[in-house]
Image (cartoon, rainbow, N blue to C red; front, top):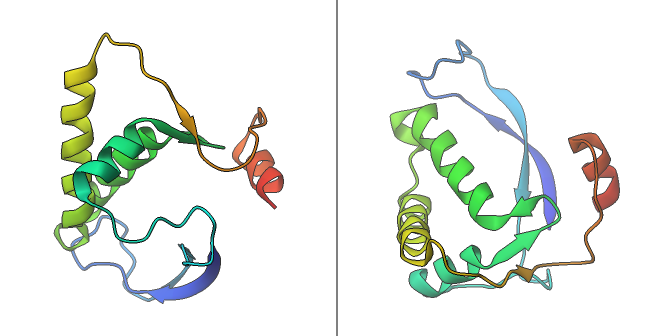
Length: 124
């Protein structure tokens, strides 16, 4: 994974009230990362998301929170791929409610942490 700061111009209809560019930390998943999956069938990817968890929790929770954040940011921030994955995952969740699901842990061994700062230190 690569992390870099990029200059971002907020959408004009966002609630941020910021008109100038701001620097944002952007994480980019690269093909040399052992967890990089590459192109995936959307339904297979949704099923993998629903059974996976990482150091910060359930992958579905991350996807649903990302989808909500993009929807509320501005009209221009919607991402069709994220919306489609969230819709597929919610359909899987509804279909499997009440059944026992096996979780696939993605990445290294998990460690309980108490804060985001502690998590960032754990991931270094």
